[in-house]
Image: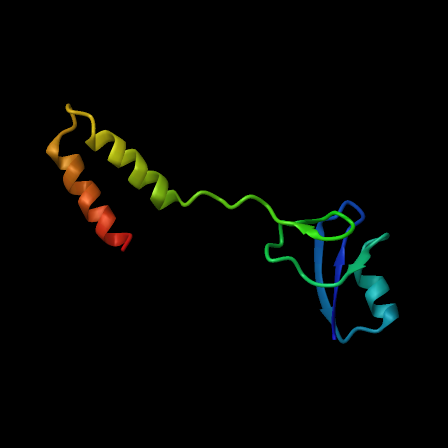
Length: 93
């Protein structure tokens, strides 16, 4: 059975399976706290009752598409930018 641990500050340490109590004590930092499950994202922090998941990272491709879309709506945008946007949009599908 896998056992999951966090540091006293709530940061996730990891899951351990097959270690006895003495082995776990040697592997874990002082004050490690056992929690019922692993977080969805290892950057999550334990608040004493549940994991607080970090905010999702913005999708770089979506941000680039939005930036190009804004440029296309500018009347002074060269046609080449529109062509590049069309090609990038095709990659995103």
